[in-house]
Image 1 (spheres, one colour):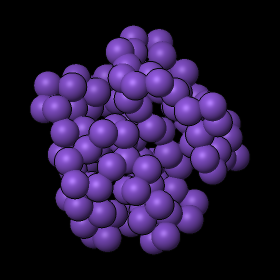
Image 2: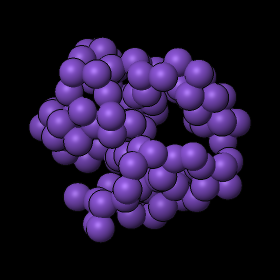
Image 3: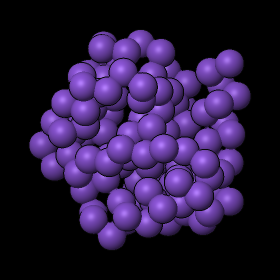
Amino acid sequence: MLVVEDDELVREATVGNVVDLGHQVVEAADADAALQILNDDDAINVLFADVRLPGKDGPQLVREARQRRPTLKVILTSGGPAPEAPAGGMVWLGKPYKWDDLKRAFEQVRDRYR
């Protein structure tokens, strides 16, 4: 799984929690680095991305990532308002979130892509 978050402290906390949920994690601080990682690592099947990233934003990252990998599972997160219906079956996780919220988001993304 790939975690994309520009805030280093938030990224470190998220990665730690995702590892605690049993996932192997690769991390990136921006969309360009994330896209390069997706090009290089075929094992990544879940993208966990902040909406507000420097350069390309999260939704733009998702569009480009899904052009490369149409079956990529996606969890988008932000401290801003939630969209009414995240596009393409994406799971939305509002910030700040608790461990149980993160766990539930992973369960939802798993269930939506079965």
